[in-house]
Image (cartoon, rainbow, N blue to C red; front, side):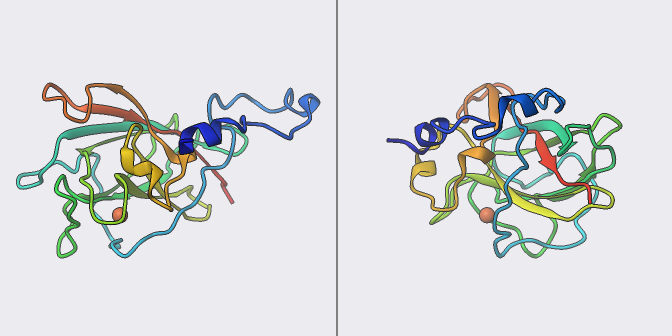
Length: 190
Ligand code: FE
């Protein structure tokens, strides 16, 4: 049995009385709070503000990640900080500079867009991005995002199917255009 099928056995909203759902605005696919995960050893404070982490000397296939940040009441959240960091296409973190690190803020509709590269694999982990997400007056959510169809997802003890990005467009090996991925966050605002 794969991790995916195990998770799909528990539908979103399971355990909630049906009558309570009518008062809650629809959040689409992700009404549950985005789960937190360990920070790991490679976070660096004070990353530059930028929506693209692409620059000369950074290896890897192009990846565009976009999505929306909502509160737990489903309202889109403007001005939410998203601070991303990740390994390069060869599975290496750049800890002496800010390569593949950057923060941005959601727009008026809670939306964000990150241009980067597909992170490479490194020993002991499946493919992942790191991110901290924080509403203007809210707590910091530290978590990680995962790629669908990765064989190592099944072996990585930290992997969570609730943190899988949706994917459209070319495959990881595709040479034309970027890999397109999506993820919507649901976070507390206080
Ligand atoms: Fe990592």
